[in-house]
Image (cartoon, rainbow, N blue to C red; front, side, top):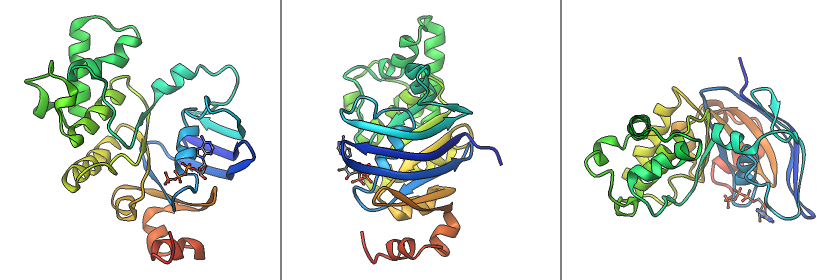
Amino acid sequence: MSTIVDIEKLNLYYGDFHALKDVDMKIKPKSITAFIGPSGCGKSTLLRTLNRMNDMIKGIRIQGKVNIKGTNIYDPNVNVELLRKEIGMVFQQPNPFPKSIYDNVAYGPRIHGISNKNELDELVEKSLRGAALWEEVKDHLKKSAYGLSGGQQQRLCIARALAVNPEILLMDEPTSALDPISTLKIEELVQELKEDYTIVIVTHNMQQAARVSDQTAFFLNGEVVEFADTVNLFSNPEDQRTEDYITGRFG
Ligand SMILES: Nc1ncnc2c1ncn2[C@@H]1O[C@H](COP(=O)(O)OP(=O)(O)OP(=O)(O)O)[C@@H](O)[C@H]1O
């Protein structure tokens, strides 16, 4: 089975605090991987290492390798801007720009040099379709993104990420600010996106991990305690700590 993300012996320190400990993980292309575990165990930290979002944090130290498509993204000669184009990110709070729906989606392509109107129109439509939002917004693309509901804003943020044609999508608790119906829509969307993208999703919601993901990693105190097929991890965990967590004994 091929691997798109290969994390080897990754250790991360915030100053003296050892936040990720000897993490090894291989992620398959076009799969959905869920990160679960109690608050503060390192899920978001690991997610952010995958597109070097942690780079700017003062006092951070990273050891080990994150190989993406065979390149260690912590190599000094890696172009971080290009890396972030290939690895999109969606955050917990929908964070559209104070711009029109159209301009939100066209933002990334424009930055990467696309200015032809027809090309942009096509990309905007394709991305909004990809994010299952096109039908709801096609007649008012020039209206402010702030007029959309929270769930629609989150799908707009997904469209914005798709517009630069990434291979990997990182999602940090993308539904935690949404109502149940919007949550379900995003979950359905994530499963559709798997056809074309590799997805890594941090979630506090174990049912969500069980519903959407192919593989699940259970984190505890900066360690990946168990990483397995989701069905196996939830039905037959190997580690007692995983079992305690998924049966609600702590966390
Ligand atoms: N910028 C930072 N500086 C110092 N410590 C940090 C920083 N970011 C995170 N931490 C610490 O690293 C640990 C892991 O945090 P992280 O946000 O990765 O956890 P998490 O599992 O995603 O938690 P949650 O589920 O609450 O979002 C926590 O103890 C946190 O306080």
